Length: 561
Image (cartoon, rainbow, N blue to C red; front, side, top):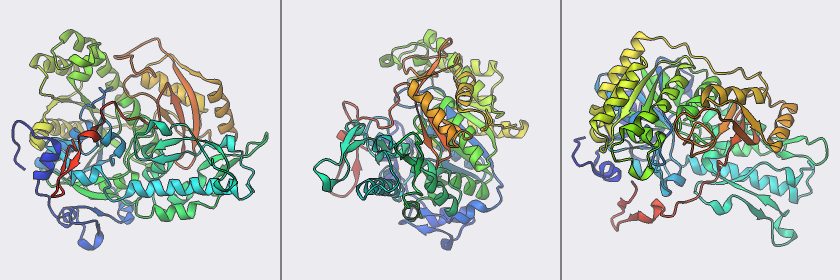
């Protein structure tokens, strides 16, 4: 597609695109029309069998530094890099997460890229898409309904309503649902108890969909979900299998675990599948999509939520471990504005040149480079250019990266599409050719939970250690007593800082992380440790993006980015 300047809005660009029929995109991967199930002309699902084929591709992760609230274009660069690789003749494929409608209607936006580096059909992907989120919501709601019905129908399992840990879920930012009371209105309406909602990307069902490897694994994981505990001193865990819910939940997810095939603006194939957040969940697209892409393409470009302290750490320690994946390189996205914010510049003046603030923020970049390297993965820095960046600022960042022995490339994919990412693509190809990855997770899962959390805090965040709230301490002891001590840890913390305080920018030292809450995700296969004031149900901002959206009489959409 032809680029124009000034760059139109994302929705305008997407609506001007002429997408290829998805059967033609599938043919580029060696798939026939009989191999895919169509969801209209431009979307399809693929069979799970593809994920069992031998891997031929090389896996590349895209991560970033600590971002501003608006994001630093990680999805955009991930898409643009894949487009650039294909322009250079590489058989490359994109694997990214599905967007949640919470951020779409809130402030940050979706996860379909932006400018001339998008996946399409953009409107569908950012809204209902192929219905995966709805299926996950239904499966989650079914378990909630069966749990409360069990309480109503005599409670044969002796579940203590005060010890129920299973929340309800909705794919929307709605702070009023963080804490609520259900069962009001008399005996016929169920047992009165406290309840909470999480946004769907924080649902354990989402994590299970992202980490399952086949239908049998899906149902086994659903069976293991811990919903609460029994009354009395024994506190025996109660699971979805005890409620006989797993089979029906798996039926609802039968299609949702199959990867979705779409395309980039430049017509290249893309899997968009699963959507756990990077701050409150493990932040990676599905194992099934990644394995399928590795079987079909020579280079697979994927991403993980937010910075290397969140999505990348969990990609390496959770997803790669669960999926037997071996990443061979990483791309670390940096922006001038995020580095200036990390250097202390006021967020309202990030468009103004400030070399002093930028220099103060560069240690944040250095830490994220160190984070990727300590997993044994070689890294290239992508300097994602914004129109407000000065030449002096860009030069300062690129010189610092080079001084650390890290290849660096300027990227302009938002403005120029794949053509704006060719320098980065060449640097990545050179890195893959000359450097061999020695990937290894950061810790052994057989270590105690507290030790694994302490390892992440010291090695990834740069902290001095961990403090555990009394409730978290008791929960850890309980989880280890019921056999959940030998799992990875999924850290939930702010994305804006290496600490658990979103206002501490740069590369802080001399700090400790406080773990306020720990809870099981036995079906997903990890334990969640929650630090600081992180919320699993976001709220809408004062001026939601939803207020600027509308649909025209002809059915076209306005205001969606």
